Image 1: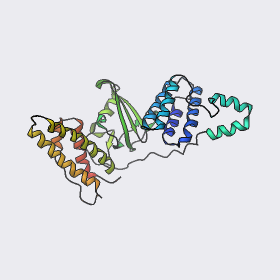
Image 2 (image 1 turned 180 degrees about the vertical axis):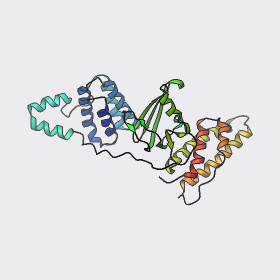
Image 3 (image 1 turned 180 degrees about the horizontal axis):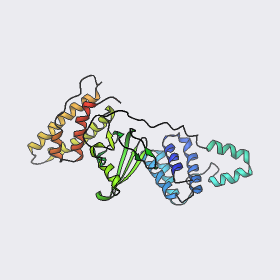
Image 4 (image 1 turned 120 degrees about the vertical axis):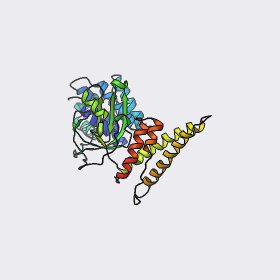
Length: 307
């Protein structure tokens, strides 16, 4: 077995399959670890931990976290009903072939579904304000404008549509590693190689191009609503509030509420023309996340199409 590609496939199924299939898949994880051409126990444990995080605060998340700890400790992460690991199951199968053949077949993961071509967005997309990778937000929809190698070394094609689930940034600003997990595939980008630095900067949205889909803009609108509320509270709680600050926040709030109302509607009315994005740059700082998010939302809403 080369690398951890089979383990990644199993990890994906651990999120979506029924509860009764989890233990069987974990037995398969143990077998793949032992059969690997190179040591991959730490990578397998990391994959299980990542998968547990994707399951949220659930019993399955706790079970996968315990499995990751067992793998890290060099122990089996699952046992058969009879209390034996996968090797014990094979040994008993030799003594009672038919009985164990039936059990092993019942424990085997289902055949993977045939791979479908990735969703692709064809044609030119509207030009929108640049969005740096560090400001990507959950729910963002992007279109690849250039091919990029994903975390498994596979090339993501030009035009592929991707929906972000989470972004994690590790390390110092000048040597950070960006982990982007989209619904369709994941990417690991390092600041140090020049090619990755260019992708991370995303100049002119030349790599990951935001797509003005309604659901994605609704996610951004809710994010801005929460962050703007925090800024408003800070001004209200100030013993000597600055009236100019309050006026700028009120201007942004008025436009943002109008934007939110339109996104929650049926789309029959014309999209609002929102002109106060420069106020966000003045208040929060040019190049800040809030400045970039307001600029993107207010420009994209005019190009918005229902997903």
